[in-house]
Amino acid sequence: MDAGASGAADGEPPLISAVRAGDTVLVKSLLQEDSGPDVLNAAFSLAVRMSAGIMAQLLLQNGADPGQSRQDELLSLREAVDSGSPALVEALLDSRIRGRHGESTLLEMRDLARCWYERGVETELRRLTGSQDPLVRNRVQDDDYDSVDEYSLGEMTVRDGHAAILMHLEGLLGIRTTFETLMARALNHDKDHAVWGNATIILANRRDQATWTAAAALRAHSEPSHRLFGAEVLRLTHLFDNSDEDAFAGPALDLFTDWSTREEDRAVLTEVLVALGEHCDSRAVAALVAYAGHADAGVRRAVARGFGTWPKAPAFLIDVREALLVLMTDMDTVVRCAACLTVAESGDRDPALAHAMAALLDDADRRVQVTAVYGLALHDDERCVEAARRLPPAPPGTPREDELDAVWRYEWRRDGH
Image 1 (tube, one colour):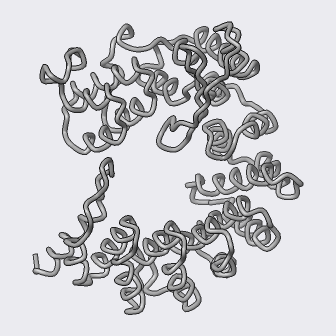
Image 2 (tube, one colour; image 1 turned 30 degrees about the horizontal axis):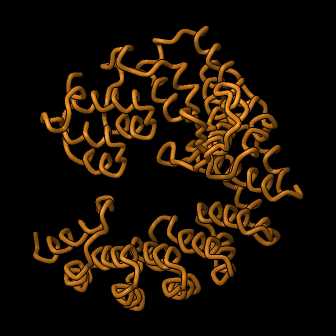
Image 3 (cartoon, one colour; image 1 turned 45 degrees about the vertical axis):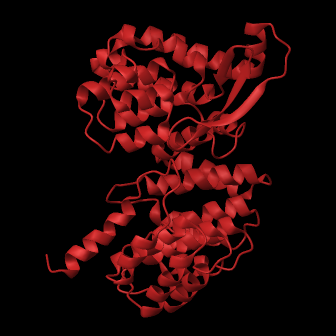
């Protein structure tokens, strides 16, 4: 564990330096290389001591073994709960080191998390600091998927993920929290917040009729936030069902097809269309096509990607192909990129689609250009080679663009290897 002790000037491994600098993008890049188990484990210990939950999780996903870290090399579980970072707490409760904390400790930490949640971060910060100065509040990424709000007052900084921490501890303790309680916690936050994400995942993983019925009933609620919560629970219930029976597939398709014709809120409609994109069925196709020209870019993006989530077919249906050709010229960059990616990864070799991708090689956005190069390479189109050479340099901090590997794989196939 000495790898994290010295400074970069003393030959510190690059991964350790990147963690110490808090550079998540560089950490992700370096994890593509083989740093060796000792460096990975040392980097994990350092990330936890720095309360950098997002980096601790990245390191765990890439082979770090938390069991190699002594307890005195890590933050205490109490400090992690106080921090309000769900990612940090989950790193310390990884299955390989969870046994270091008995049930009584977990119960104590549950009560601590609940205290923070019920009193609120602002109230607790003012109580602990005695300060009435204005709080500084920022949205920060807590892990690869979810964000939280971070509050600073004086020298104290705390994140507001305590409800998500509470849910995680309840799960470890075998406590089944009611649908209504989990929903109430989620609705205190927006859809991108860790609390919302944890609540919907917990409910979806139950995969029981009572949870399905409770979520389905929300589609008639007057508040869009309630309908959005219900839609996400229903979508994930079907998505997470890997059983042979797939009992929720039929009910989900029926429900979301009908719902798509009635929903007026754009955020809820987007969730409904994403759900339909997870069903390979003619009714789902028709529902998506109907919204290809919607005024909201988020809805159009859901349509574009929805066409690309089904198993590869020899060719798109004519109305789907026509919709994608229009979406590839959309005024919104994300929509163009989504439509191009769907075409890229399809089995449809219609020349019109290849020409549409080639037209995006001169797009004003580099991300769209990269996707077009990737698509042409997958479609064995020689234009990808010169286009890859002409790509402008990637901006500093851009993650590794693995899609461009498709070009040399195309050249390998072309040259008969």
